[in-house]
Image 1 (cartoon, one colour):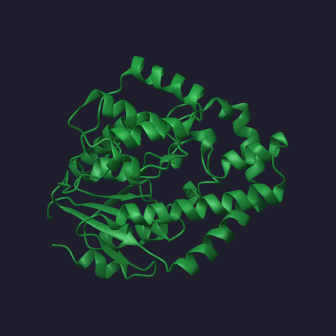
Image 2 (tube, rainbow, N blue to C red):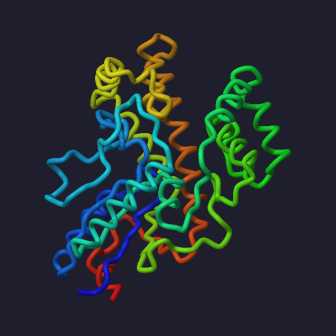
Image 3 (tube, rainbow, N blue to C red):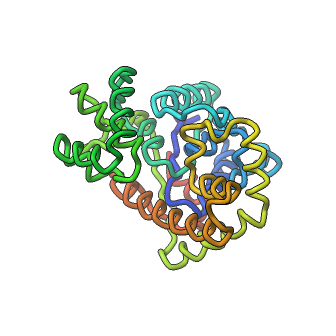
Length: 305
């Protein structure tokens, strides 16, 4: 058998990455290359966050082994450094079994941290606490202005409304470490040489229509009931999970802060914006091959030696 390969199926939310990963795994298996799937969606790490993340049910995984789904409680924080180690361990074990690993998801920093030789800065708990106190006292805008002054390149790549990301960036800058922080290096080096990068894309008007329908379906499928159950498990104490798009809006509806129409409209707007940022992130990947969701997975499997 040829050397084990790492595939990364990436792109904006709602483009059909999951379906392609299943078809690719099946095509590889037909060619004598068993394949297993590794999650690269930060919110699908969480147990019970199913409807709002469009997580593929176990019964629909076609017998293909899936890794790093449902591995965190909603009260846990999804740290990129932890994920990098967990994903690389899973990939190494798949390769040791003689299989190809297919990473699928659209969380840009999580994908990059594994696909590339991505050095993450250590955490400084005391510094983090100090910066979080500044965030609570001064607000995200003030800290973002500080980041713009200290590291304008990183600041340009971060959503100024995301206080947690701004705090983390300032923590990295303060440490002065030779790391990649929250951005893709200008000339990234692949972590595993035999890597194939596949970007799934849909024209923007069609994607927006897809995303709007998906949000409507989330509410029809019982997102509020799911969030009610997750509240009993501590969702509101979760730093990461409680702020997920759709979940934050469902929580606001349950608390009476938003009407149903307002929650759906806000989720639609945030999902569209997130999809745009995802495309911008993955466009910077050198050597990525962009395909439509209906691409021939068999031909793709045949394209590597």
